[in-house]
Amino acid sequence: MVMTEPVLLTETHAGVRTLTMNRPDKLNAANDALLLSLTEAMTQADADVSVRVIVLTGSGRGFCAGQDLGDVSGRNMTFTEHLNHTYNPLIRAIRGCGKPVISAVNGVAAGAGASLALAGDVRLWARSAALIEIFSNIALIPDSGSTWFLPRLVGYHRAFELMALADKVRSDEALRLGLCEHVFPDETFQQEVQAYAEALAARPANALKLTKQALNAAMTSTLDAALDLEAELQQVAGDHWEHQEGVTAFKEKRAPDFRRG
Image (cartoon, rainbow, N blue to C red; front, side, top):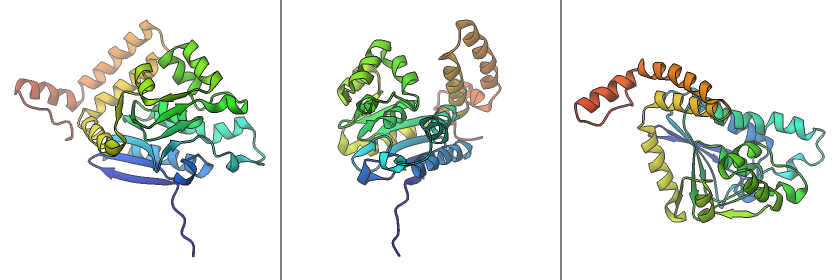
């Protein structure tokens, strides 16, 4: 009996749930099984009270090489139907998740894989990682959120150029453009990501959930709407035990413990 490797690996340590795309022979190119598994795993991690931070990464040399074209070849499904069945629910799950999501880009992120690389709340890159909005090479448009994420990071004109020419963005330029927050050596990448995630997991989970909610809303709101939502959510944060712990720890000149409660 031939045993097949799971398309998604899941591991939890110190409050960090790591989701590893596991199709290394295809640079983790996405098929339906992987995308649906990722969406389900993201939803489960969001609901699991023991999980404080979620890391999305890839096995082998690639982060995600985009859509596995062989998986959709000859299928009786429109592009619109495919996106609404697979990628769009996943992107919505990442952005709607109440916990910080780290895109740990260990290698090439191309096409929809680039969208996944951009979708996290924090983007950590290995030195050898690269991003390519490769859609125009096959006369398609960027999808899975790239047209929303990329211009907000680099501006309309640079985003259009990267998409039109399908230029490869390497880690040094990605850091300069704001496509990632940190770049780590390949040799220590996994350890650096875990250490960063554990540091984030020690922060106040409720406050970070509300911060993410406010930031998501502010991306498409007016200043007046953002001010109103801040006032509303600040009350929610202030009524939570985390706030009292933070104030008490400050007065007692000690580090706050945001993991209890």
